[in-house]
Structure formats: C-alpha cells, structure tokens
Amino acid sequence: MKLSHITEARPLRRSQRVLAFSAAATAVVFALAGCASSGASSTSTSAAKKSFSIAFVPKQLNNPYTNVELSGGQKAAAALGDKYSVVGPNTASASSQVSYINTLTQKHIDVIAIAANDPNAVCSALNQAKAGGAKIITFDSDTDASCRSLFINQVNTQSVADVEIKQTAEQIGDQGQIAILSATANATNQNAWIADMKKDLATNPKYAKIQLVTTVYGNDDDTTSFQVAQGLLQSYPNLKAIISPTTVGIAATARYLSTSSYKGKVVLTGLGLPNQMRQYVKDGTVKEFALWDPAKIGQAAVYAAKALEAGTITGKTGDKFSAGSLGTLTVGPDNTVIVGGPTEFNAANIDQYNF
Ligand code: RAM
Image 1 (cartoon, helix red, strand yellow):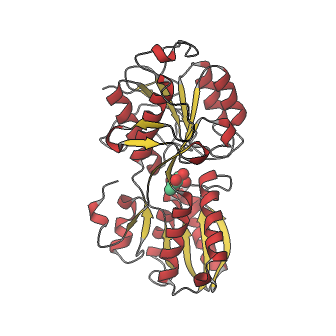
Image 2: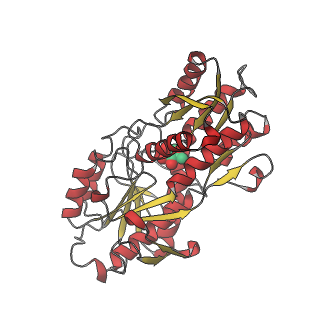
Image 3: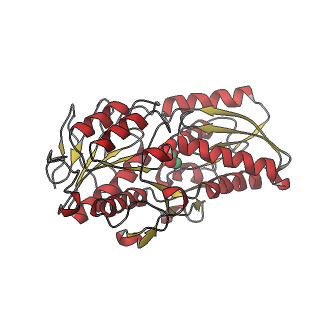
C-alpha cells in the first residue's frame, strides 16, 4: 500500500513496524487507501458507510513511542478497510495540536483520535470538530472528559504509579531522595501518573523514608531531557533514583548515566521502549523499567472508532466492542477503556520484546 501525504508533507517511507517521520516536517498527513478524507460529511450517514476516516493526532511526531502506537492503528485500519491518517506537531506544547484539529474539521474526518498535550487547550477545537459531525476519541493522554466520547487508556493509572514506585523503592532499599523527570508540564497522562506516585509515597508506610525532591520536565525532547537529567544530578548530589515515566526521558537519562560517574550508583526507572532501553539494561545502567505494547493502543482506538461510527457503542460505561486480536474491550468508568497492564522489563526478559 502506498502512503500518500496531503499537507506540507515531506516524503515519508514505510517500515514494517515503526514509521519514520521527517524531523523537519511541520505537518504530515499520510493515509492508506489513497487519501485522508473523501470530503463527505459524516453527520447523518456514518452508520451506513462501508468505511470511515480516522485521523490520529499524537502528542508529537518523531517520538519512537508514538510511532509504535500509530503502527497499531495503521494496521487495524488497513485490516478493517478504513481510511487512516496522521497529523500533528513536532513539539508537544500545550496548544500545538489546535491548528491540526481545525484542518481535520475542515476535511470532515469522521473520527479524530488525539493524545492530548493539555487537557483543556484542545477542547474548543475538538468541540468544533464534534459540531461538524466528527467523533472524538482520546488515547495515551486524555482531555477533559467533556471533550471526547472515549479515552483509550493504555493501562490503569494507579498501576503505573505502583510499578514505578515499587521498582524504585526496591532498588534504593526503601529510602533516600528521588526525583521525577517527566515529559511536558501539561501532559495529562504524565500528571495523572505523578499524582498517583505522590499518593503512594504519602500513604504507604513502607515508603515513609523516600523523599521526592523535585519533578523536572524534559518536554519529550531528547536533548532537553538529557540536559535536564544532567542538571538534576548536579543539583541533588544525594539523589538515589530518577523515575522517568516517559520513553523519551528515560532513554535520554539512561544515555547520560551510561557514560557518567553515576552509572550503577543512581537508579533509573520509568517507562521505556525495550528496543531503546536494551543496551542500558545490558550495560548495567538500568536494572528494571516498565511499559506495555504501544501498538495495542492504536489498534484499540481504531476498533473503538469503528464501533462508535457504526453506532454499536456510544462510549458509555459498560459498552463493549470487539477489537480484533485484543478480544472484546469494555468501556469502564469515566468512559475509559483500559487496554492492558504494565509489563516489567529486566535483563532476564528484555530480549523477548521487539518494540
Ligand atoms: C512518552 C510520551 C507518552 C507516554 C510514553 C510512556 O513517549 O510522554 O505520552 O505515554 O512516553
């Protein structure tokens, strides 16, 4: 199948699992089946349509995690015969997605699936899309609940916090200073995980001697994250561990630690892609980290979109839909679908994973 790009796009090439994006592209849209949208209104005819158009708006392009997520969406849309496209900013700042949403509204895309960089900054644009007939799904990072029908959450929020704190506490003997190196300050998913980590630290007596000294932001930019990690270790000479619940942040921090005097002394945990973290597990920089298969999020989003478009679900709690190889997924509280649980990676199992 051919990938075609529509607006301001530079040439894209297709790989088996991971889509490579141009670092300089300001807007990239590519689609299976030739084009992103037929231009037809979806308002009243969607249920009768044979196929629909879904556009993914990730937090940012050029993020390896995003690319794996999208590969799952692309595959599912191809399997279902639906039109798939991606458009989004190169940086994950709060309002960077707004203009892309507006363009999708003008194109009458049937479903917009967005990983929000900010819970509220995109809402008015999404509401306009909705008014034009589009259905709105969030994935990875939610908006305010009023701005979407459904949230495809990779994993239960509290379970992410629990695994992060557990892996960290174990390695520092349940005591000492720790810090969090997050993505952007507004990211809904990051902030939800951080809030639950703070709750764990405050309420579990086992963690009473662990002190969270600061949260810093690498903005899901590799260079910024690397520099912020470096600064963190200079500012807190007694730091025992860094938790980086972002794939960009943990990889950059691991790279910094791996050639520094902190290697093997300062613990690094967080959420990382096994393919990015493998070398740091093997060289002893990192002992354990966690994640899930991001491709499943893209897949779940496409199947949820299909069910919304067909009118078999509305996104209410208790709704069920078939999601291909993921089986039947159920909409839980807060119109949220949980795709799976976190997997813990270490030297013993990391070679079993390829994403
Ligand atoms: C980064 C992004 C993304 C998050 C993953 C774990 O790539 O911040 O939103 O879910 O890490």
